[in-house]
Length: 393
Image 1 (cartoon, rainbow, N blue to C red):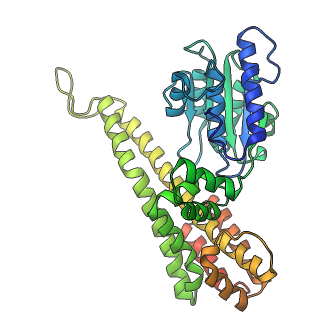
Image 2 (tube, rainbow, N blue to C red; image 1 turned 30 degrees about the vertical axis):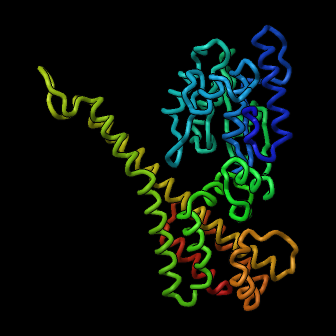
């Protein structure tokens, strides 16, 4: 088993990365290393495994056997403890220029173990314009042993000057059968549940795994997909919108509260709160209050991002539902991700038209755009649910 074995349905991309890792070893030995470059851009739809592919490539570059998957170096990369691999995960709404400049300085250092220094940048499209410009300079003039691995949904999400300097690896959406096989063989998920999760996740491996292993995730999906049936009045539309907002807020609180408390406590400890001894006091030393305020701002941004991601996941489930309604109306012979709601699909297909279904899908996509543009979530969702109830208003 190698580091590339977990990349589901990505055989072509794996071949490219294997060849590049071999070329990287040639560079280290003083050879030409044709096929190896210092900047890579991993693109693909959500759940296709952009980060996993980049991490596997990092391990292959650092492993003396090209990513064997069982040596200490491969293990260190997998668990995030390798000294020459830095993974950047933007947790807020964006990644700023100050953080990027600090990252560029760290990337300029020589590798600790003498092979490569790898910077794995998840969701690189979240870099602000100023941050992207700072990143561009580092990619244009990289140190000889530094490799940048950027991840983004599409090449178009990155500045053209950045993507033109990167080798692009495009990942595809894995088939339902491939995802179900992985769940059944590697996670010991019962075949029937694995098939359901793979179909519902539409090729998103990480979401399929959450659906298969977490009953609460399945319950929340069920709650979202039952929403169309309950949109019978203006009041019901407002209540449904409020319910979605509340659920996303609960998700954010659950995901961030404990982490926020830990981060704040550690920062206060660093700045001397509660210390004793001559010259010390129980309050924060100079500069501590500003650092805490900066941390709180980052935490608020992270919570907003989690809320948005939770809402976006719900909206994508709704879009899948109405797309399946449209498929039923048109008699299309295709796999239905929401097949488990077949009774609701058939009922809505009978009382509405394909044009209604298209309008409803458009309303969901418009809501996603509004949320990304910082429109008040309650207002955006109320507008959407009313359009789902009465698509021809």
